[in-house]
Amino acid sequence: MKVARLGAVSFLLAALSVVQCASADISPADWNPARRNWGGNGADGQTYNGGVVPENVHFDGGVCRLEAHGNLYKGDVKGVGRRGVALESGVRTGACIVSKKHMHYGSYRVKMKVAGVMGCCTAIWPFRYVEDGKRVLNHEIDIEMPGRPAERLKDIGFDYALCNTWVGENEGEYTTGYTKLPRRVDDGKFHEFGIDWHPKQVDFFLDGEKIRTTRKHVPTLPAEFWIGVWFPKGWTGTPDFDTAEAVVSDFSYTPFREGLPKIVGVWDHTGQGLHGGNWEKTMAALAEAGVTDVFMDCRIHKNRFSGDMVKACAAAGKAHGIRVHVWICCFQGAEREPTPQSRRDEVAGWAERIARDYEVDGIHLDYVRWSSKSRAERQPELLTGFVREVSRRVRKARPGILLSAAVFPSYPDCRDDVGQDWNDWIDYGLVDYVLPMNYTDSDKKYTRYLDQQTASACRAAKTISGIGVTTGDVTLDADAVRRQTALALDRGMAGVCYFDLDKTFETEIMPMLARQREAREERRE
Image 1 (spheres, rainbow, N blue to C red):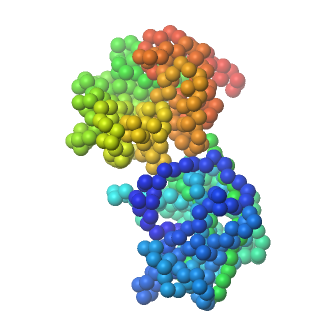
Image 2 (image 1 turned 180 degrees about the horizontal axis):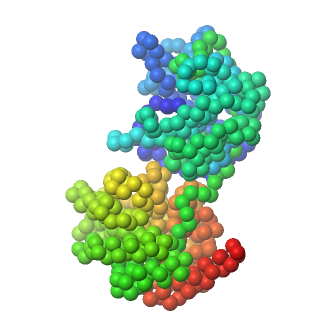
Image 3 (image 1 turned 90 degrees about the vertical axis):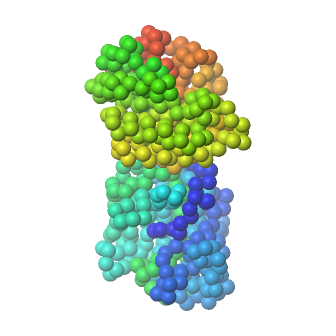
């Protein structure tokens, strides 16, 4: 189902809050009534339906009644047009509620009675629409009733449903699932409708029974959840009735803690590994320690980029099963502030060329921030636009490449202080991971950072905790590193990354990591 374009104003500027669990009664504390119009034009070129309006939403003792007005309606409630203007009539006007929180991969269950009349669609759908001038992302999963057995508008009924997945609006960007139900749902009884949204597939359920699995066009962006009744043009029949209603009694959401694999990473700021450029020897030792990812500084900010060193690192990483991310210091120093477009273009060009010309697994951005400008001049939107452009260019240059960014740990302070709005970078899918630099030897401070960063399950799954083993201000021993690592992984984070690949890391931390890896393998045996 295509909801009318909401555009950058309502979605790109919205701060997302992703709920970890919601359940049971339907309350206005958790849901907003929608006022929207979508669904196409009639034969006269005017809006076919009256959209959905708050006047048709009725919260009543833990349930929500969603009223639908058909062709025969003559009451006082008016519909809404595409531009939010009230219509003269209230015919073909429905109702929707929208979750106040965004959700992501997980198990969704809705208990409700469908409206049960032809011409009116009862539906549930997680939905996210982003339009930024260059592309449209329509990320959506639907269960819509009544359905039909095939594309042809024939045999429409409540013994079928449409179980759909979308990532865009164009042909080839969505999958329609014509689905036969094990029982009719227009029987006046409550039924439980379910969606299990995984990173690679979506499973659909009716009353606990799986009715369909789809592996194409699986959405990836966190989304609001919609429940509603609305009036499609033609494909649900003719709405020759006065008033009908759907009744929603329960909603639950349980997040899945799955997705990208756990990462045990290390930053290498020299770009030469532990042995003066002998990456084969370095990667062999890191593999023994269970390291999965190396973030290699390519030194472009010092005009010392070496393509041969990147090739050697990537080849050795591939041989030992370690992913290599080329680390780019974007705007380091007052003389390299991100304000000039030419400077942003230069850095984006470097990222694109490296992704295109070298067989690396990832691009890692650092110093995506201001250092010397006044607070009023530190525009988060400018840096977010830069990350969006890098994301577009590197993913086009090498499909499947990972994009990550090192960030300041305290959000939203870093958005206001240095322009890093990294929650948005995650929420809009601009990066695969963020790596907050949680460099501290204080367990209390470190835990406070983690609590902020794991407040939502879906963001935690894309956040790698940066642990400062040897920074300018912090030195940690093996026990402290073990403790901070466990705290991060216990909170469902994507992994950890250690700073820095130096002698201390080699002699004190890598042996501890190797012992932990061996212990895990013994437990599996």
